[in-house]
Length: 144
Image 1 (cartoon, rainbow, N blue to C red):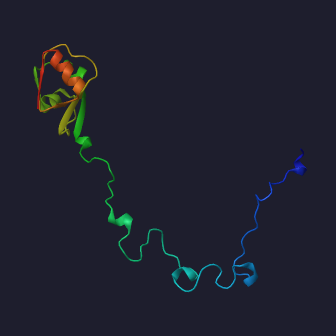
Image 2: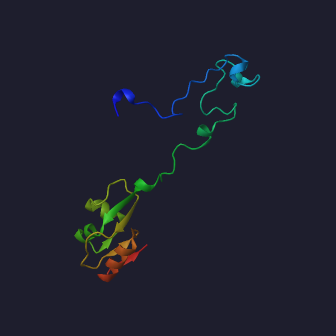
Image 3: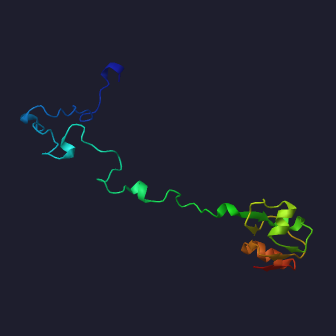
């Protein structure tokens, strides 16, 4: 094979469709646009998403998507951070004072990361199953 012998496969290249060039072409007269109507006119196309004057879908639907608006209000707390706090009873205020969660947090959730060796009592703080089991195994309790 040589560069001057290379050519496309048979049927790979088609001639451009020339519309409006007589009845013999099969696309004469109306040039495939049909008769009358907005889409038959020159420049007769509407913008993307236009629904004939009806409120379009992109304006009917809410814009916030499927992201939870309250997710940012819940702080994630490691079990090791709970163990590092010196208090026996821990609630959201204690976590804020210790600097474990931010001042804007409205809730907290403890997850299993690290170990806990002492008994602590959680009040008003959510936990994962693993964190709850570790706290109760250390002699502590979780009260919602």
